[in-house]
Length: 459
Image 1 (tube, rainbow, N blue to C red):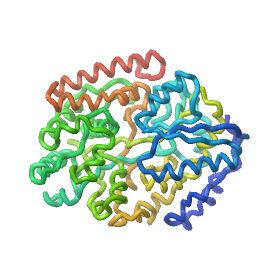
Image 2: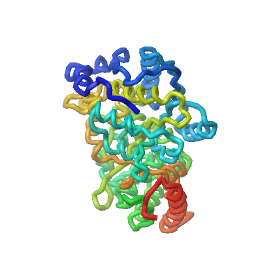
Image 3: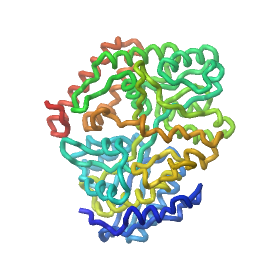
Image 4: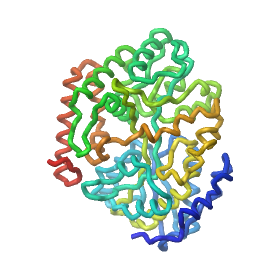
């Protein structure tokens, strides 16, 4: 159990030097708020996490972690793998009963709960030190059925629309689409008149998963209700699936059925996609490879559905887990708190890709005249990312309006929703049949996890 340290929120904010820290100097990798651990730590700390979409983050993180270890007598090693490989690597380590002490997931890892340590003590200490945690962070890591925090969410990534403005200007929509209906009509015109398709995937990859959920929510549907009961088979979901079939037939090409997580980024950068639903990583890449062309990429708010609802999931959500087999859980917990204490560095070195789960730790991001108002990475116009200041208001987590439970995690990991859309779009099933098929698969998954005692739902 963690003990309270003498590191207060007041001292933390003082250490950041609020108001006096501007631009790159605010988050120099050589400056760390070094809170004294609340317990003696030593030995080895092995960390496994993804190879970040923004390479600068890894160049900052690895020496950052090692330096913390040097100060505290811990030998820290960091291994990076592709985000798609993390679940399988974690499962292999759990089966072997050995491996890394700290593993970073990019989606809620609820299905591993029985093999993970409860991090409620770390969450409570973080709240005491740094203030409230963003709601979607808690909903992605807390199981209300077992009353356990199976992970610790330290950040999250917004998922706005990304558009090539010049293409939308040519059809009289310089601000891009604001509704799914406008996306359909405008996307069809751009494909017919300019030969450029839309970028909404229907394949077994991250972005397709997120787009499917955004569309369902915006049409008024949901995978489950607040009580964790399957609700996918509804008129609203069927309408969303019928819409996607229409969007595919009028504004897309068959390649969307075989996309990887990088495909829509690559097409947007190449000028072969007029609109994608993604984080700002594609835009940041384009800034480096072709700065003048990057001026043509703008972010847009989530698209509204037939009843005016606009809601998207976070793009990815970094969550640390500590497996039961961890040999140094105390050091793992202390390092998590150290990272959060220095999250202004994490935000900056991700080039504003990653937002903090505890907003008090990176006030420069959202404050008036801060990084989203005046992008320190050369956006033109300088306030291009200002829209993201409202991202929390239109973002949620997978499983909405319920928690990101183990059943939802399996539905997510097996890509049931993108495949539901794909079956209808390709004409293999009617929208009604595709939704019913998804419901049958989900019911079996929910029943299995309910039998494990990890989800509710009144079964």
